[in-house]
Length: 347
Image 1 (tube, rainbow, N blue to C red):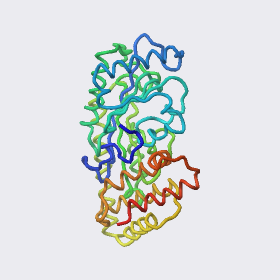
Image 2: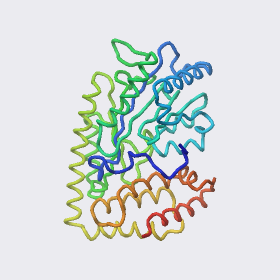
Image 3: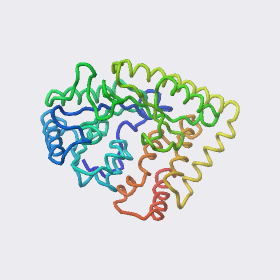
């Protein structure tokens, strides 16, 4: 697979359940190898051992036939941000030094970081609100790798991890939500406070510490200890269904009471994207998110939800440079981004 491509992961296809509101669902597991120091205390030879062991296990379990394993030279900054922007690796992983590896399946629905905060962190990604598929993807890797290596496990606490907040199941379940209706009706703070009150985390689109942009939010569980995987998924699914219902009602309110204002906002955003000669990543993300709302509501019919959703990733700096095959200065990149968007959106 050529990693530098316009083709995006199938989890961005906007074909899953509730895709008008939920962009994707993710299930991530943290695991460590028994009898190897945890990453914070690892020596270079320990890192090499973990890397060799995981590479071997991926080959033995057949995963290397379904994807590619990237090592250091393709993962360091700035090139590694290509994977961060595609939600296949974390910013801390790319900025870290030392031996590391990243497995990515051909359809980008399954990825695994080696020597991040834990020895192994792997995730399944699905389009829309689909924990069944995301859990099945990550669970298959968990089971198959676990048949080849010994995980650090305590009968009392469960899977042992570098951070105490991940001990137990080692599982994080999250959804990537587009909530413009709740933002425009100023109901978002109340809804997010409700999510906090039941123990969920709300973050920006690139996880911990990232900013919220384009009315895009990531909601995940905080607790991994004292609950089963099924219980964690049930809680977050129920909360997400409530948020989706609130978002739908907010959109109905807007279309019934403020339709002209919403249409004006949507068409102004589309007009700027189709006419701009210079545009930053932040501005493009906000405008594309508004256009995505317009497509979801049927205000814009000539664009597909998948096209607009994919552009939210493709216009990011590292992905844009990868597609164009050039390293660009920020000002030049803003100009080339505007041209790229016009080519995609002008009909």
